Length: 203
Image (cartoon, rainbow, N blue to C red):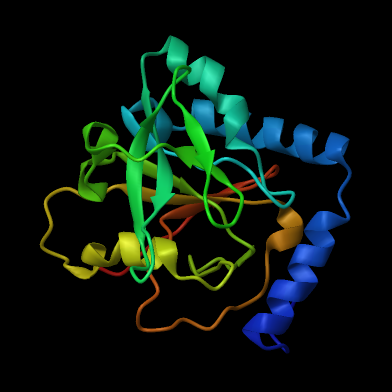
């Protein structure tokens, strides 16, 4: 576990380097363990509308979950970057027939169409990529703040409906402590190849 003696930028560099040192076989195997834990979790079993991401930069691979989930008639949604100057995400329906196009970072996303978009608050669960995490639910991403903006409405505690935010990562991405910023939206849990870390949040 990396201790927080570095700046967020330094942690990002160190953890990405550790993740990129994993072989494809290791990533595939560890991701299979993550997805196996997911399929057994009550959070996943109770969900119908699920946001995922397509793995990039040696991230954990939630794509391995798709064949199982589609057999259970679950619906999946991928993040779609809002065009500049806006900074945030939409979520668009994703299935075997979806037409994907690369966004400005080269990551495939559904071709933007009003009919495939849903509000973030209608999701049951969102599986979120990350660079580093700690056991208080803090997440360090790539620095764009896209997910924090997409789920910023969760700061309103009186909401009757809120998706569960679950980070997917490898154990090598765990750090002792990350700094929490006022605009950060903490995770409800993190699943790695070894553990499902559920976060107890204050009421």
